[in-house]
Image (spheres, rainbow, N blue to C red):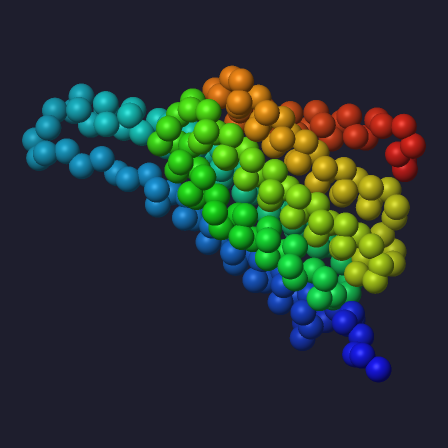
Length: 210
């Protein structure tokens, strides 16, 4: 008989190791964002004005840093919120979790690409499109975590639907940004702010569990 791939959660089991590994990757990725912001180097004795101008010229990089810092932070919070519903480990968690972490690991590149080419269609579309991929991986992970045998038996149906709605809203918000960026590039990343609005829409859909 094949060995059961689902085991009880405990400090010696895979679920805790998966969580610790994921937290480490998120922490490293969110730190790497600032490495792409290179401090300006001016000749010794340059006037103060030149230093201020050099810093102002880094504005797109700083904007990209803060946007991606909070994007990755929200993904980490969603990952934490999702895994808090699990009480058992399953090997089915591994692949979508790795895909999500891979998407997060690439965020510094897409952040630098968009920041180095502000308001340009292709970089912003790639940034938002990459978030769609990350959102899909996260949503797949949520589907597995919130289903038997992984989900804690005491988690309510309302909590499961709420978690899944959050994941779907991220996909819809990122997709909105990707589509808008094709027509008005400067608004592409701004459209990520529609994620809470999409969540409200999903919460009001007919037939939703309350």
